[in-house]
Structures are given as structure tokens and as C-alpha cells.
Length: 153
Image 1 (spheres, one colour):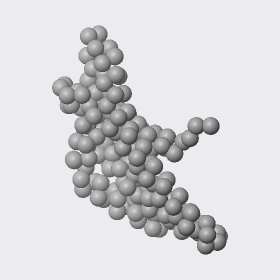
Image 2: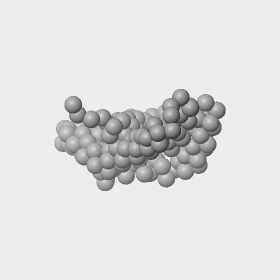
Image 3: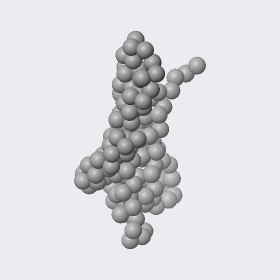
Image 4: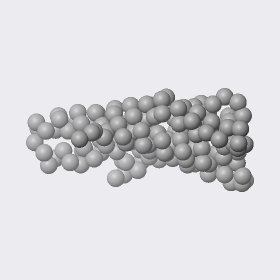
């Protein structure tokens, strides 16, 4: 537990240190134009957004370490043969999760944003609130990572 918590703290510090490029990276899927400027409606919203986005990025970075710690906890209970298989599963799950996040970022998020922002074009003046956009983007990325491990029956 201590190693997992320390991994999260270190990852959070690292993600907070690069929060400006991280926020710009998350904004890249937005269509060009007026949608690039995000709206905040309270004095504390930018601070909380930076903390929230840095935290979720830290979870993403710390996930392989958490999975390895889970593996290290379980491995004494299994024999040598399954140990190698379990380590391969940890690596595979981490790779699939990161692949799902990348797919959601590069493919799903731009298409979803184009559709959703263009849906009421001409009827509504769409201004994107920063908090809601970053919540939407991080939820889509997390869902993409989780769905990469799903299989059809």
C-alpha cells in the first residue's frame, strides 16, 4: 500500500509540474476556432481543474505500478509456472489499457466532440465550460481504457 500511495504522490507531483502542457494536450481534440477558449465561471475553478486533471493523469501513470504491486501481493500464493503468466497478464492489461486510452484520445474524442458541438449549430451559441469539458474528456479516456479490456461474448 505504501508503494502504491508513494507512486500516486510522485506521479501527481510530476503531472502537476507539467499541468500546462497536459491541459493543452487534452484541449487538442477540440475543433479549431472559438471552441479552443474554455470558459470558467468561478475564481476557484481553474485551480480545481488543474488539481483534478493532474490527479487523473497521475492515476493513469501510477496504474502499471499498482498492477505490479497487486501482482507482487498475489505471487507468493501461486507456483513458479503461473508467476510468469501472471506477470505477462499485468503487462498485457497495462498495455491494453494504455492502448484504449490512446484510441479514445485520437479517434473517439475528436469524433464525439465534432458531433456534439455541431449538433445544435445555428440554433445555439455553444461555449464550452472548462470543468465540464475536462470531466467529459477524462471520462472518455478512462472509459476507452476500461473498454479495451472488454470482450464480446
